[in-house]
Image (cartoon, rainbow, N blue to C red; front, side, top):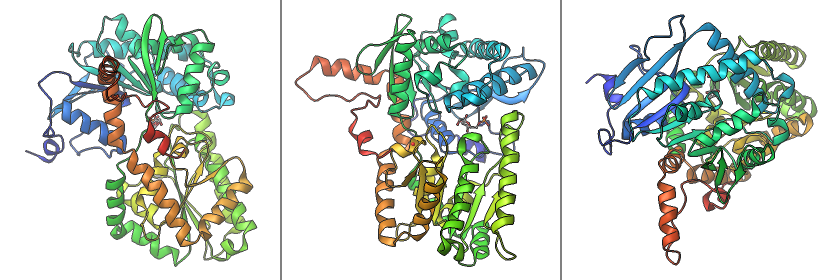
Length: 511
Ligand code: F6P
């Protein structure tokens, strides 16, 4: 058995072969190559683990262009998982991926109506590519497969599958925010998109405010109605809508961070600091991440708090470039680079560069070690579905000397990590003050805040998320509800969908 086969070996509780395969659909698919397993974040690891335990297919885009898209999906099977990917044409990528998904839905879902494109061609391309993928997927399905579709690239996918006669259970998870009705109404094909949700059995969002927004959109647009409890209805189909806050494996990440103290890159960073306090930000280079506001706040902190400037606090901003073909991304890349140069020129010294700005990706191990080294973690998006960097920063801290998380009130993670210093990222002065507070916070307060945040992470791990989503999509929660309504005096069996009343969610703070 080679390393790859070992990595994808079925888990001991494998249900592969007994039916009920899991079919995961996402735009990006971490297909293993001859070079090995692609670097995978927590979500990919969790989905791979679910696929290894049930057996199944991970289906989506190959990440490549081709003019010949008539051939069947490219398959790679390792253990119980088959990766099935298809190329797209240049036009598909322009209209579906760069166009409607990332230039229309992405900015609107992140409340940036000023950046949203309204191209009829892009909208047509989006629905066309969804239908293309649905037609390909249908040929691979078995009657008892359960299908789990991910993210805004594929909202109408289930409606095409239903048109093709698919009766399987289908779930959808929206990884990014769902906006309030007045903002969502700016989506081209709004009514069609909303009605498309009616083809799912379960629709999951990151947070309760996202669920509330979606329910309000459905009703106000007349595209459906809220029936009762978690149930909504559209086009004559009932479907469940709930909040499933995504998370990380906090214990595994904590271990990785502890081990990473010996990582060469982390040692280099520590040595180069020469005792100066370090702050860290880690984001894709995206206008939603608030990077420009953040570095302005850091500069304001150095200017307004002489102690912090005297201590020569140093901020490391790790920001791999992303979606560079889209003009709004090219623009923010230039703006951030210019601002960094301006701040370093104004505030730096011959032996101190306040802002270290890096446009490359780093291994998870190196990141874990860098988070642990940083006295302050800066996670200040202008809007974010969840933001797992916030959770990773908390998990990476040394329990006896933890750093402080400065977290945007507009990140989904703020729903849970309420012992962070919660800031309005648009308020540069207040964010600057929170940064200073984080750097100077006494040890006891740092420990208290970290303990609370870590407890929230432990209460909701990535395993909870996968299990809760799959339970709901598989309909187990509905069976349980029927059961409990038949035994009203007995114990109530909990719904797999996290309703607003779920105690563990209420126990979590606020992301
Ligand atoms: O946050 C949404 C998301 O689609 C993630 O799932 C993904 O990791 C990230 O954006 C990167 O986007 P892209 O696939 O466009 O590079």
